[in-house]
Length: 211
Image (cartoon, rainbow, N blue to C red):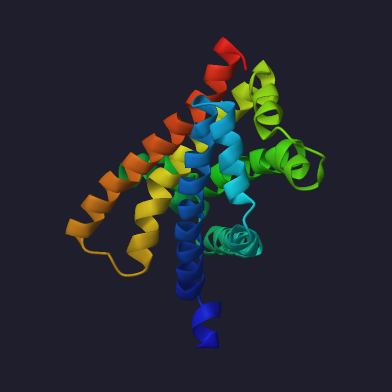
């Protein structure tokens, strides 16, 4: 069993499972964030829900999932680069796979950079700041043009990352025939669209209409 988890297939399996787990978190996160467009009271109620003990227990598991996903993605990327000659890697890439699939690591790294910014500017204040009005904190950030534009770019990059990552994860865990792949590709594009547009409209709203 230990050999499986240290093998290339095992690492891809773990990365797939953690990736799907993180997609579930994104579904919850987007749902709560969209409450910003409903009312301050609705969003603050959503934040109170996220502060429940059961959610707090999930938080360290989520953080561990992020760490494992990033580590295995880095290891596999380095292994692939060493094992594949440059000329072979560049030959007919545009015909064999999508742009997102060729740049998954770069897309993930850019999303991670935004996540670090998000943690420093919003999440840290949520957890350790003396915040009574979560809506005011988030809306004041999102109505700032620079932060809002960065947020939108990050949402688009996340969508691109998921457009390949979602179906690829299922393929790794066994849904590898052509029928399932085509279906999962459609679902992946759906998720990519929902997350890309869903996260983007929030800063757009605040930049246009204000808090």
